[in-house]
Image (cartoon, rainbow, N blue to C red; front, side, top):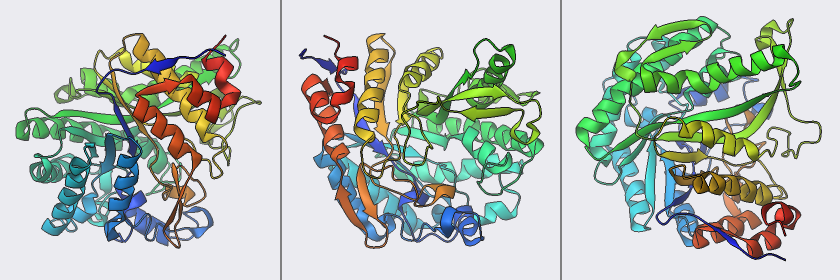
Length: 442
């Protein structure tokens, strides 16, 4: 049986990713807390509640778990509604608490990657129209300046906005996020304002901190025609790629924002990213449906024999990771895999999913793509937005009622990868023998 190790470059970042509303708990002042209070919005009426109780201090033990299993980085987000609970009020205690958390990473020799907006908005922002309001970019810039000034001694890696494409699709094209609209014009306005907000934030961060590296975390969805011979399926797959994957990142690359057959120029957004952040989970097959107006004339599916997650939410298609990184490499910037993971309560799929996807990252590194780090979603089970507690993405399991953490086998899988800075054949043989021959052909 062949023996080998796929090594990563020295200094590669190995971490996990989390977001404030999903792990902190005890927040009633943002749009997601309000959304959870509305009947029928969250699966089975679930609520974030204590979440992972990070606001109660359990981040310390979770950071210990990450550091003790070889992780040298962590991605977390700042909750705008805690920093600025009212339009005319800054909460210095909340800022100090985040400063303590970031220092906790530093003390554990872990590099922080800090996200400034991860889906959740203060209630006061919602009351003035949310991201549809053209005043929001300037408001976001003030919040960003406040946070960066407070954390600049500890953080140099910043994500301005997480998955702006998912935020717009989920909240404004019928995807189950607040405010629950289905309005293409509103979606365009939201993304337009997010591009402008990112551009303002980018320059503000660099003004405060010259050595900062700033980008976004983009959800890259691989779209392939369900019937490759069909010109309609091919056209629809290309249309979805342009609008979902390309529209935002093109705007912050060349200053031209195109979305849903609309176009505008935002010259101040050009060249406002220092790296490309990629969140990759799976690939969709696209079928053109001329009568499917409510789904924008298409149907999405997975291959009939796909290796599916617990609820069928994710198909294990690691080749899509390489595709995403190949695409990201076209922007000629460093690349970070800012999220990648799978829901898997009993941990039967996650070991091979993780190994196979990280192997695709190694393939890209071997093509000299400038990939600097990988962040697994997630460190511990957390509140998964409109899907509530029905999906378990954590390396560590969590009982949200008792707050008891359970060590899954995937903790050891990822620990060996982090500690070796690579994928070893004996590790694959031990944890995912079913994919050994694919990764290490004899």
